[in-house]
Amino acid sequence: MPMMDRRKFIFNSLSTSLALLAAGKSKLLLAQQLTPAKNLPNNLNIETFHGLTVKLIDQIGMTMSDGYKVPGKPDGMGVFQNDDGHIILMRNHELDDHDEDLGPYKSHQGPTKYAINRNSYGGVTKVILDKNLNVLSSHLALEGSMQNCSGGVSPWGWLSCEETTQKGHGYVYLCPYDGKDQSSAKKIPSYGRFNHEAVAIDPQTLTAYLTEDRGDSCLYRFVPHNKNDPFKGDLQALVIKKKAKFNTSKGLRVSDQFDLDWVSVQSSDSRDILRKRAQKKGAAIFSRGEGIAYWNGKIFFTCTDGGDNRDGQVFVIDIKTNTLTLLAESTKKSEMNMPDNICVSSSGTLFFAEDCGDYCHIKALTQNGTIIPILRNKNKGKEIAGVCFSPDEKTLFANLQKEGATIAITGDFSKF
Image 1: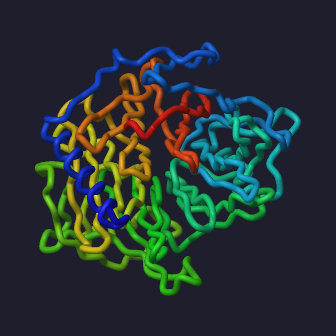
Image 2: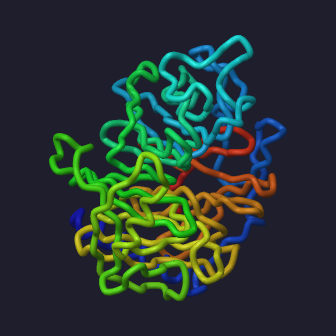
């Protein structure tokens, strides 16, 4: 089958599986099939799908190569590969100005000259791994930012998003994965100032799609005027045609599809008003937009507490047809329980991490409509974040936020 036909087939299969899920017709492999992971510290209480293994990469308090500590609250994360074939993890830390104890500094250390804000402890760390997933080096890549939640991989490096609008914050930062220190990181004001969650880049046009973690959030895109200057352009908000300020979080059916418009908006460096400005122009409302990913001409994103049951939704934007479709809406917590970060494998299987008050999972949503819990955190109420694949898709990386740990899950993911 030609490549484009195969990709179209895979996407149609994925759409069908998500529709089956939301209709309550999908098959669910229960968590009883998970088995305890071995050779982990006592505070990591993990079960995995049989055949998968888990390795601890590093954890809060360990000393990095630059002499600073591994910070706490690891969140969104992206994978890159250097010319030597080494895996590079670019990892957010969702810390603020009250998290000194979880920050990177030892008792005799303080912020470097590159810190954005000397009184905040959020940022990004860079971890380089060899082929056996051993840490070769690690250091600060962004320092003094605040509540770095998720972000996204881009052609220019890791895009780290601040989930806050405190004074001086609320931006996206570009952190090149080949940077030697924080000096190479830079703020991208054109992506707007708001409660950022995550970003996905359309590699064809370099348009950035951005989620906002608010109960009355909007969905944004930034359209460059010129691909050679990708951070100059137009910031826009999604509008449902003929449905001004349409609330997508309730009353929808799976497969509901809407034609889209986009309206230009302008953010403020002093007030948290972007979504209000957008909604005055008719922008649609989403309930807590979070994980977002590009795949095969589509933008997938989650609304963590969207839906009539408030257990989560998955939407997709078809870039070519300029339409929005509800692909999934959880009808019970065993299906999806507040889906957050997502990634999509090359074969079209959607992987999502849960941010819930129960036992959080990483789950795979397969092409035949099966939801498979592949990892369970048995520390109740402890969020899982940062799901992302190694280039060969034999390892899925993730963060256990409250435990301050980054893990590598290895096995045959092609069966999902």
